Image (tube, rainbow, N blue to C red):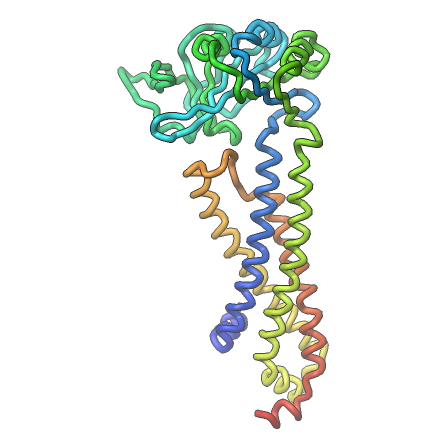
Length: 356
């Protein structure tokens, strides 16, 4: 580390350029990994196996109450929620979710400062709500009780939801949901039904059949819908290639600035193997420096993006991302060092020192 700092002091600009090149490469690749993971998880229920739930969206000119009986019957044997996007006059968009279930063990959201609905509460017409953690500022207190306004109606808050995919959502009982929005059109509604045998249930099949006739229906778990994930993976591969080429160019510039130093080292007895080891260790150290800077910068950017709700899903740096970024950092170090090895072995001390 001391030599790295000395190297930075003596060859400031070449070292900065090399770190910056690796930083940009890792950051772009890491962001793409985070974006791909977040996009994949956006419509996944992380606490459930994929085979244990169904998830689809419906677009229709029909009214919501058209499917009310089917949904209520389905929720007699499953955990079911309906969600719609809601826009407010203050441009604070959120997702409103109607919930009803027969067994809470099927799906357990991460609730703090309270509790999730009981079975009886989910089957009621009560004006109670579970509020996503990003919407806490909309909560107000009266007589030591927390409330939130939904469609200008007052709801008592009984818990705060910290589940990643639900932090910008408000959950209310299903019957209350239909009472408030039943006469509105099904323009864009998402339906989640969680049960191991969900696709075998007649009510589920009736909903699919009825809504497929004159509506647009998209299975959010289908391969065709997730095609974008494969495209993003391909883009990640292209970015990796560009990252390697970019780093090789910066490494060549870095080595050119060190010809005299390498010539002197060879003069005092350093072998080509010693020079190769020195180059690899330094590039590896610079790569991990760039990796740490990348993680810090990304964390700040993700915090701002999530805070301002710029995207409709939550960005984060996962352990998988950290692991892959570290592997990529080492890989870039190894590959970019190869041309540097070749260049350093061709340095003739007599020629270089004579030029100086």
